[in-house]
Length: 475
Image 1 (cartoon, one colour):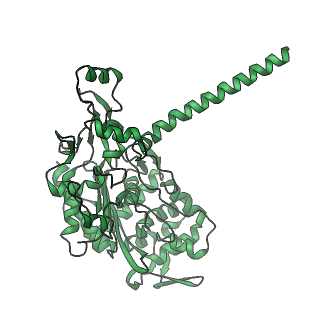
Image 2 (spheres, helix red, strand yellow; image 1 turned 135 degrees about the horizontal axis):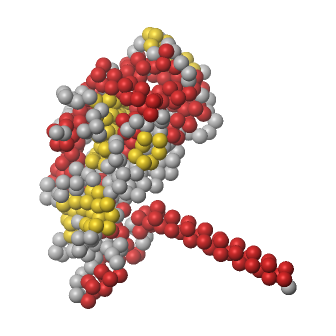
Image 3 (spheres, helix red, strand yellow; image 1 turned 180 degrees about the vertical axis):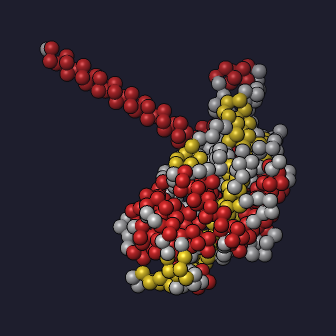
């Protein structure tokens, strides 16, 4: 009998322990996945609330109301049409065409589900319709509009699909998140729905494309971390590197001769970086990429973004060589590549991207206030310092010269990534960069699909962004 009681006690403790672990996991899951579950289109509670609750306002960092609810209970958007279109992928639309915009992803606040029981009872006794919380963003709607205008007024980018992200590299605050083409959430047309460029798709968060030579930031970081003496090693670029049955060439068939890693980075030499990747080995390059967040399951609290990919299967020499220049099944979003550049600027520390500045109840109580959060350390500080110098050289005397802005020190990396769209070979233009100034700690990523040269097409848009930041956020 004594032995039976002992076994029963052990079983009881085991069951209690399992229930405790399950409870902890449940709390963790609700905390991390709650917004994703709540705003799911199949959530009947969410759909019912949209019909019966006055949704709170969405406000930009400067106090501009981006979305509100009118007297008829309809969701309406700001009157300035350019800014309204420019922020549509950030905010979303009332019909739910844009996945995971603030209007849906932050619905638990906007529809008042974080309201306390006492607040709900008070509203019920007064006969008031329930009102949701107001959400203030870190984003600047005028900057978003400026970026769209930069795309539309340049002959090389007008009508192109693309995306851009601007963030504070010290805090992770997102100042702009833009996807093109845009559309008017106040007046969605049949043409929008049938547009083959898919305007409802948020390219800044959902398009995982080969980052091209912007990935050389990671290849260079891996070389500096793993290859002793790499800074004095000389690569030879004859214009073509034969790897197994493939020939790797440089953009415009350039021949750079003998060059160091620093010089190869400045002129964006594919031959040198393909050779570097083969010396590194796939394991080292993959490990560095994963230190920068590739293959992570991104579960950010404020924003939903597709995961970036670095292949994990056994790979041959051709695939490894192409990986060194940001091709070969590597995929990343503009948001993530902005985070990569921001990590270098922030001395190797990658911050979690944040979009919510604060959440305020109808009574004025601040429920949530933005707090910067470190996401991971991507590289040691010493290596980040070297890469900061490399990236400044790219803009000062290399492929990124079109990103220069008078009075600012700009660092960056261009990318011209080869891709295939509907069987047609295209080149996507990329630029990743930042302002090297503690008073203006901002990084950006620009992607122009089928744009061609990153230095010639994406970098000038980055210059427009940096100039806006200087004019509006500088002393």
